[in-house]
Every structure is written in structure tokens, then in C-alpha cells.
Length: 493
Image (cartoon, rainbow, N blue to C red; front, side, top):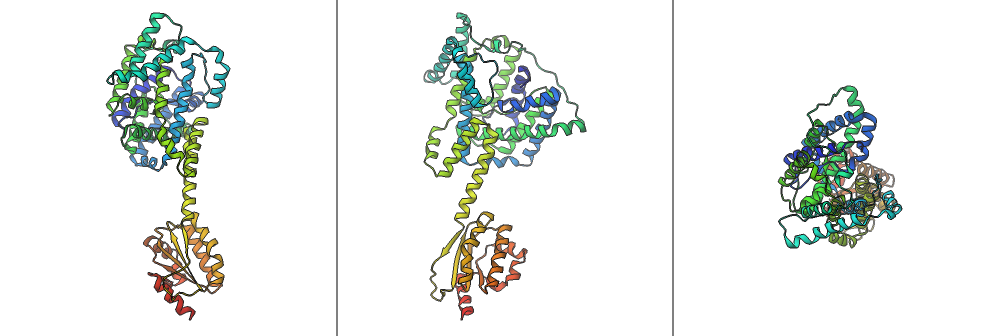
């Protein structure tokens, strides 16, 4: 991304601690994530490190405001197939990202995109390192087997200790944190306030909004994943407040943008976390390692860390839920597969945007299909063949409004009266009013009477405000179907 490794450590410490204390998720772990790599790189290239710090500060303020305005609840409107789809997609992304270290390919610069990443792996198969693979496989085996021996100590911690000691004793030439990040140094950064003026705001407000939106979405989605894994329930607006404060604190110490990290959160839960104390301990541990034990941390094999993340990715995939959704209606299956594919091929933001739009379109189509039912017969024998009765179901909105005209169009010409039974219509919108106005006009042209039965409060108020009732006549709005049929009979006679 162009930022130093130390900046990432500072972010994990400061932002992680702040979000754990002030956030709304019991098990969320906050820190720098791969989702910000492209954004951070672009800001540093154009505005420098100071520009990134300022943009992070502004993003934190925006997130704080969003949380105070209770905008976090919007995540509740994300359908379940989308959540399962992007979670599985993230798992695949995490898994493929670890193969370089697990197999010891030694690829210095990995592309961010999935397809390009697979192509690079294919081109570097001849660089396979059996020592790195052996360490990774050993760590993976320890992680899988250790819980059967002792559940109190996390298997990932045991795997790191065992593989690190083994590598040092054997002197194997495997990649370690120290060899990967040679310039990594300890210590703690000083407090620094960015220089903000009107010109700076103009230049950085757009990147700041991008960081805030991406950070907010990813944090809330991570919290949803955490809820599913830990059987908890997060406070979405409070989480935005915590994330906003975390980014503000991170920026004041030269850190990077922070968000809820799905991989670290999943690892946190799999290690037994049940409260924010685990995330606080995580931040304190990173602080101690950075300040006191960095020389020892540099000895940790990258293959062991890759094994931990491979295990995390495996545990993130909700196999049972995927099996259920694959037997669900076609629209749910399409949402699941589309979100999964877009998360893997592109990124989480694209997947969520497309998934939400698709879900909205599917919902509107379903509502429109269920909005109109023709009553072919009525119990009242006084009804004449020249009267058509229609019962509308559900909200009468723009997606369903046009189908009314298409269904009734021929009846206007053939019948002497049309009755719209609207007891099951809780709400209508401006498009529905416009369609009803067109229907009334056509009825007048063909001398066909139009009756409304049992209007609910909202539709009645909307039609009254639009002047529709006054134009049509109050006598054509009745409370019961027999009353409308009797009026039709009188008119025909």
C-alpha cells in the first residue's frame, strides 16, 4: 500500500483497543485490512502520508456522525443469502492469499485480484519450497489436532511456538516475519495533529468519504459474520461510533484506516472469545510484541501464519447454510452465487452493491406479482355480469401499479362498473396514484363506474391529499363490498 509495516502495527494497537472499548460488537477485532490497500496506495501517491492521515481523521469523524445518527441499522436490510455468499467469498479470498507463504513460492509482489493471483501461482509452481510447506502443514496439523488435547490454550498459539522453535533449531531457510519485513522496528509513535485547512478539506473529503463508507460497510458486515459464528447480537450504530473513534485515534498517531477485520474476528471467535476483553488483549499483546518482543516475533515463520489463516477461512464457510440455500427458491440461489462470485473476482463492496440491487429487484417483482387477484365470483347474487371485482394485495407501489392497468384495461370497455377491494393494501405511492388517475380517466371516457372498497388509512390519506377522492366523488368510496355491489346494481337498473 506504500505505508510502513509499523503503521499497520500502530493501527492494530490503537484502533483495535479503541473500537473494542467503544464499539458495539462483543467479538469484533479492528485493524488495517486488505480492503483498504488500493485506496491507501492512491491517497499516498497523490497526497502523501500526511494526506492519508488527514483523510483517515476525516473518515473517523464521518463514521462517528453516522453512528450518532443511528444509521448503522441499515445493515439489517442485507438479505441472508448475501451474507452467506460474501462470507464464503471472503473465505476463498483469504485462502488463496495464503498459498504464497504456505507453499513458499517466494513471490515478492502478489496481485490483489483473484484471477491474476491464480495465474501468478501457476507461473511459479516450480519455486515450491518443501521446507515452507512442511512448516505450514505441521502448523495446520497442530491447529486441527490440538483442541482434542487441550481446549484452554489456542491451537494457533501452540502451532506458532512449536514451528518457530523447530525452524530455529533446524536452521531451515524459510520465510519469517523478519525476512519479509527487514526494516521492522519497535517503539511507539508520537502524537501528531494533521494540518487541516479549507484547501485540504476540498482535496481529501472524497477519499475520506470512500474510507468511511467502505470501513462502515466492512465493519458492520464483519459484525454480522461474528454474530453468526458466536451467536451474539451487535449494536450497529454503536459499532460505527467505535469505528469512527478508532480511525480518529489511529490518525493522530500516524496509523492507517481501520475497520472490523473479518479474518481476525473469525480467528478471535474460533479461539474462544466471548467479550470485547479478547480484542483488548489482542491490542495489548501486539503492543508488547512491538515494544518488547519484536526480535522474537521476527522469528515466526510466515508459513505458520498462513496455516492459521487457512484454518480461519475453512471455518468461515457456513456449509450447512449453503446447502439449505441451494435448495431455496431460484432468486435466493442466484443471490448467493452472484454475491460469492463477485466477492472472489472483484471485492466485497461490489458484491454487496450488486447483491442489494438484485435483492431489491427480486422483491419488487415478487410484490408486483402478488399485488393483484381477480375475484371471478362473489357471494352476493345481486352482482351483475357487467361488474368486475378486483382484490389488491400488499403495498400498491410503482412495481405493481402498471400491472393493474394491464389487467383491468379490457374490463373498462366491457363492464359497466369496476370495484377495487383494497382492504389488504396498507400503503400506496405516487406512481400508484398516477395509475389510478389514468384508470379513472379511462373509466369516465367509457362511462364505467369505478368503486373503492375498504381503503386503509394511508391510501385514503394519500388519495385525499392528491384530490383524487374529490375528483371521483366521495360516494364511490365505500367500506364494504355488498354496499358497492348494491350501488352498482342501482346504477345498472
